[in-house]
Length: 77
Image (cartoon, rainbow, N blue to C red; front, top):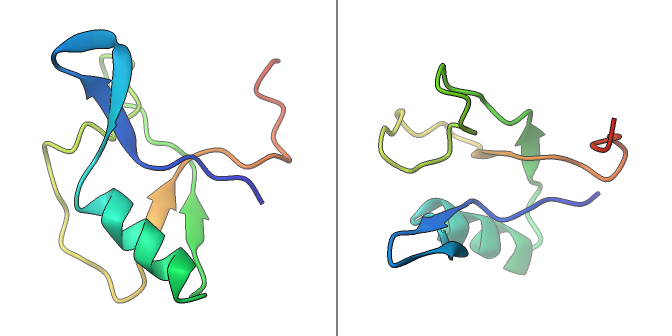
């Protein structure tokens, strides 16, 4: 499966992205230690964003899930 790392627009340059921490670090740790990764559909907020701005955090679950798209989805419509 394909998964994008949790990211957001870089404040200093809108043409660049930065990783959302600590989510990106947790994802890389799970991949490095060969632990399973659960993927959930990307969340949309009412303004049309992806919901991964890193501003509001929910309590951690025992098995972290990461929002994103997988390669089996037709994102081009």
